[in-house]
Length: 222
Image: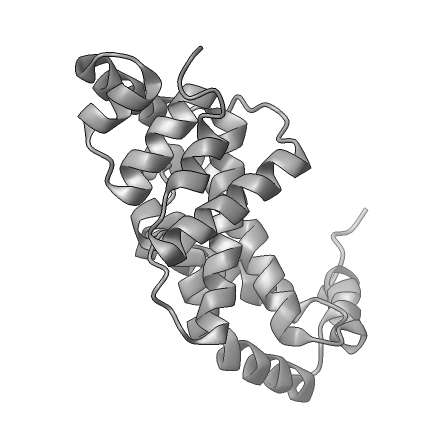
């Protein structure tokens, strides 16, 4: 049997390939959102190289999306970017290349006044906290969020969790190690919603009482 010619091997791809004019419009939509998409991915990943990889994948997917059916390109691109960035954090490739740690210190900055920036930050907060809840036990979650997100001293964590200062350091360290594993537990929707709400309130007001109550509901009496 003779090898298929160029027409045979490329006909299907040619049918799926968008026209040049359509691609130009797709590129315009993508470039109009690129800076915002970069910020979203970077807030989740925390490294430039991984962020650029995500944006490249978003562009490839956008090219072959049935864009006529997409009513809001900005929303579609934002959702795609967020999901791909979360997938990268969960992947073994990311764990070997960079620390799989959400950038909580940056996400805890509630100073953004721009509505678009605020929305991007909210998306990243939800993704980061979902990952932490899926991978960390309650005590490690509390210690990690308060230490990395709000600069809690180890002595404060020790008092809150009713452990020694040395053990508080161990809990945070083990949380960092645990984030590099891919074993995850289901995250209850209501629990996630409460933590996200408490985190946002603490970041915007500086009052951590509500967040502490959500993270350590029994006041450290375990």
